[in-house]
Structure formats: C-alpha cells, structure tokens
Image (tube, rainbow, N blue to C red):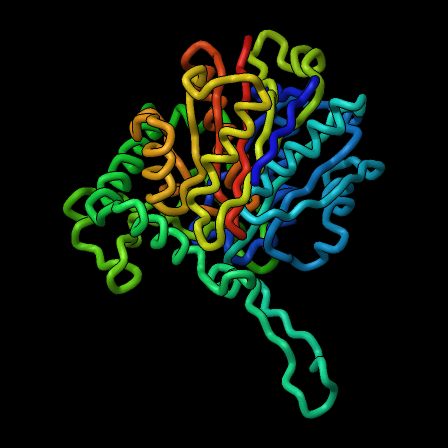
Length: 400
C-alpha cells in the first residue's frame, strides 16, 4: 500500500537546511539530552543564518527516543529559542520522522500558515528503560522495555528484528556477502569524497556543537564521530552479524546521536529569505508499507508514489539519496529501478555517517539539496525505509 502527497506552495532556502555532526553510540553526545542538543544547534543555526525568529509561526518537533521532559518538548524548545508564543505538533515515525515532519510543515504552509521551523533530534545512546506497574496488581511482575534496544530487536507485528528483514530480502533476491561488501566500500568512498577540501561540502550545512556541562569540560563536536573506514580487505575479514547471514558491521549502519533542522515557508518567502541564494522547493512526498518483515523493499513503492504524485519519472531525477541502514536497501532499489549504485548517495549516506533515527532523513535531504546545487540545480529524490516495513520519500527541486 502506498500513497503520495503533492505540495502546492512549500519551500526552504538552501541556507535554512542544517544538521549537527552525528556522534557514535556512547560517544561525545551520549550524555546530552536530545532536547538540549536541539536547542543549542538550532539557536546557533538561526543566528548564523540571520533568520528572524519573530516571523516563525509554528514549530514541528520530530523525535523517536524519549528524553526527560519531552512531554513539553515542542513548547520548551520554542521558549528556549526565544519564541515563547510558538507551538506546534510533535511527530514520531521511526526512521521516517524527518519526512513526516517536513510533510506536516509543508501542509501547514500550503494552507496559508506562515513559516514553520522543523527540528528533528534524537539520542539513541542511553535510551530509557521503561517500567509499567504490574497489570494484574500485587504478585505480578511489572512490564519492562528498553526503548531503543527492544525496538531494534522486535517488531510486535511480526516478531522479527529489522536486521532479520534485511537478511530476508537479501536471501530472496540472491544478494551475496560479496555484493553487500562491495556496496559498503562504495558508500564509504563516496562519504570520503565529501571530506575533500577540509570538509567543504559538509561545512556548507553542518552546525558544530558547543555545549557547556555542569561540572564538566563541555561538549565540542565539529565533525561526524564514529565513521568507520571500509576497504575491500577489511570488509572481507569481518564476521557476519548472524551466522549464515550476509550483513556485517560494514554493511549496516551504526546507531548515533544528532539533530537537524529546516525553515519551511512558501516559495515566495523562501526566495526572499534566500536573497540571491538557491531555494529548495518541496514537490511531493510518498509513504508506503510492504509485506511483513520485508522493510528494505518499502523505499521503492514510497519513491514511486512520490514521483507519480509529482507527475515525474525516475529518469528526470538529477540526484538520488537514500536512507540505507542496511546495504541490501540500495541493492534492492537499484535492481528494481535500474539506477546505478554509484549514481546514488554521491556524497555520503546513513550507512556510513550513522543513524540517530529522527534527524537521519533530514540530513539526507540536506545533503541531496547541496548535491543538486553543486550541479546547477534540478530535481532530486530521497527515499528511505522505516520500522514496521514502511518507508517515506520526498521529491525536491533546487532552483536559484
């Protein structure tokens, strides 16, 4: 099942797309609340870009991992950003959270609302342990759940883990361990290309983290943390995660911590904010769900739904980016669509830089927009899977 949504009048100045560096699980951001991280990075992004906060009419907060006081997350974040009168929805849709948040903002702006600030943020490190009172009263054990690890390990509908869905698709399609290793090497080489010129590509949109901590030295992070170099020899030496499987640590992403943001407004407003800079028009989105325990397949019908709604063909896309928590995702997409593997994710992807969940898609969209800008503008497609055998996709157009 899939459906698409077209946006009548929604855009983002290219300069109003940003992301923090992503930090590895247990790394520099592991003890920083994702709300604190969002407040610090978003405040810096707004200041450095000269965005008028008084013009912001709504805020969409995307998250997937609970943090202390998240019940008041959107209003708290708005107040900390100097916008105490601003409110808006909080959205949580696993790995599709970023597209869902942009969709919400675009829909609001398209019906006449003013600029909407989208903030996506997550900390997979130190996820909460949830305990509910015994459902049967005294004498019964409480119900306990580790929010992050248990969610990774089991879909309540199928009883299967997300890794199991990747292995199932690889087996069905006949993809080999060598196929996945080669894709992992390619994706790392593409990410390494983005580091050229002292990270000139990334510095165009990445906002460093500078955060003081009580009783500590504070946190300073200016570049991704936890990226693992992948070579053909190195990948071949890694054991598979599961006995008899095809995915290794190189062929699947690593959980991470980070935040990303965007200011969504109408096309005219985006042009005014951009000055002489480029504008990223949000054209259409697509959402899909496939058969049980086949999550990596979902990015294909989501992409097709977005393209169909936009009235466009895949060969009209000037750049394509994916959220690829598993190498099999891109192999399956390429097989089903005919897109060359080296034509996707040309400056990096979540397979390499990590996956904080909520902000992962927005980082991918940001990088896609900058790739299009470097090529003189044009149309781009982002698509990626999400928990529950679902996916979300977004078509954008970059113009001067």
